[in-house]
Amino acid sequence: MSVSSTSTPPIQPTEAAYCVIGAGPSGLAVLKNLLQFGVQCHALERETDVGGNWNFGKPSSSVYESTHLISSKRMTAYEEFPMPASFSSYPSHREALDYLRSYAREFDLYSQIELGTAVNHIAPIAPNSWEVQVAGEETPRKYAGVIIANGHHWDPMSPEIAGTFQGETMHARQFKFSEQLRGRRVLVVGAGNTGCDIAVEAAVHADAAAISMRRGYHFVPKFIRGKPSDIVGDRVRSWYLPEFLKRAIVKHSIAFALGKPEKYGLPRPDHEIFATHPIINSQLPYYVGHGRVQVFPDIEKFDGDEVVFVDGRRQAFDLVIFATGYKLSFPFIDMQELNPQEGTPRLFLHAFHPDRDDLFVAGMIQPNSGQWPLTELQAKIMARFIAAQQNNPAVADWFRALKHASGVGLPHPQEYVASPRHRLEVDYYAYRETLRKLVRRFDAVKPL
Image 1 (cartoon, rainbow, N blue to C red):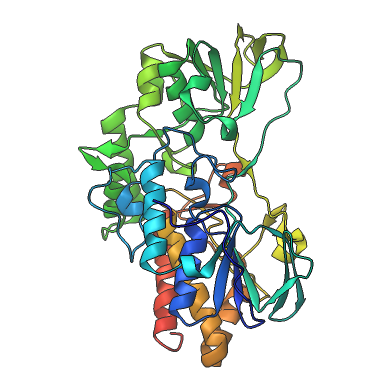
Image 2 (image 1 turned 90 degrees about the vertical axis):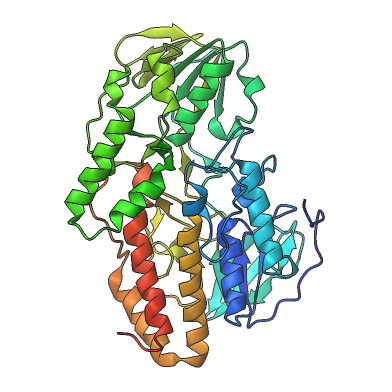
């Protein structure tokens, strides 16, 4: 049950306070940790309640009616706030939102969140001084710093396809209910997790279902011998074995549980299993194997009510859904402030500006398991660094030098396939261990 209203009274900012933009999973974790370390702060959230992408039905949400997390509840929950035992192993979007609201109530975050408050523009005016223009307010607010937590699954990216299609097209963000599929011949373009999930929905609810895949992918079942597969993988990664051997164990466990994609009629992968973001789905191979989902390669062009594919096949469809990902968008800030490289902010560990000590981005990662506990660790470091600037200059100097010298500094056990979907990819286990070590160094008072 929501405790919010359509808007909340403005919180009087001071020039010593930090502004957190967004009260989704990342913004909530940041707000909680900053408050815990005595950092003056509050959050600005454009929607009427917390939850961000998981606030189903709101303009900022990209989830649909039957969405479930693709990471298990144990690997998704904040470390300091476990999910209830009553939740399903892979929580629904309703359970996810209930959890986020409970987190906000548990740590009294609602009192520090302005709901129904959109940010139009932010800009630095001096070190540790930012102007934040809020929609509907004539005078910009002033803050000591800004932490951006606006998410990266809201600005649709759709391909340009030659020809004209007489049917309906939409981005996956516009797909909300199974009724949109009924009585229609549906083609889903894109074989990421969202595309595969929607193709399964179409197999159940549409008259005919198909998926267009640029390449073959490895599929990971949600369960291995009754246990969530990401928990199994995390346990194996913790063993004291050579990295190649641990990866081989995980690979063969998945192969044993699900088998090779080509055995079901899916294209054979052209890469190793860990070289792309994992597709957590065992239902698509099932429906492909039962003939309920046809598999096509890339689209060459549209031709009336038909789609022409690069292998020469053509087929008529009523609805094409582009599950082709999202742009990385920060419409309220000049991208140059984020140290961009090829359109992507180049930040230490995807979160910490290499030169500015008053600008951070939380949650700008794509891990191969749950994101929220990683953002929680980012928030712990942000809180400690901001506090250290006031009360422990030596520690602040150490981290300042580290983030300036390290560049992106991401722990990548192996290279990923060159693709826009991997620009924010991090290995969950390696990234988590890197963040944990940094937290321990801060807590040790002085760097090791």
